[in-house]
Image 1 (cartoon, one colour):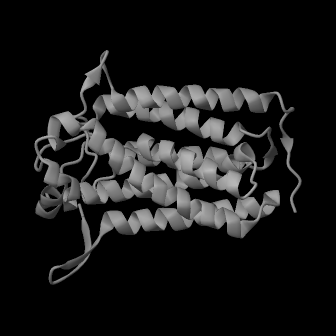
Image 2: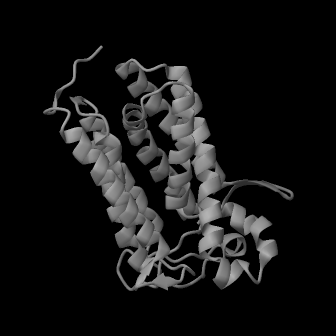
Length: 265
């Protein structure tokens, strides 16, 4: 793959970082457009997106370190500050959890209704995450288990192996592309649903349920060092928790009324 978009001496522009930045900008554009449509202050929403994006990056890295502590970081503490850890996408659910908590604090501080605002953010989160997963694929991180399917991918970049540890010359499940494709489909559905007048919590609930189900399934073909708890990875347990939370939001929104086509400004 192409973990380095541009190299000048010892300096290089990482593909992962560039695509994550592009994902944040795309999410910002989508969220700003929906905020304007819903009559929410666009500047406040823009600041919220940036705050949540930064919180998500930190949360994803922290969750990765916690989950892989016994299997790797406990004996390799210095790796916490390594390029490979910085380059890794981390555990998205950890990032999502911290982003929700920080987002809730920010919304409360600025007097924004939590569920209504989260609904505005949901499509942008999905689109931005999908683009970020393309960055994972380019960098070689978050790789899948060995695969003999026709669509298997084989990494051959020495740079990718040095930065992320991805095995070279072995056909693997393109788990990064599985998630990216699913996120783009979810984004399309959320964008279509945004034209409907739905109860507060419908969009974020839909996102949490659909993406978490996808991630739960992808974990079965993903290679990682997480220990299993009752036959499932910690990420799968977190996914089930987000499914439950999403169903709560989704059910709450259903009591707010029947979906109708929203009026355009």
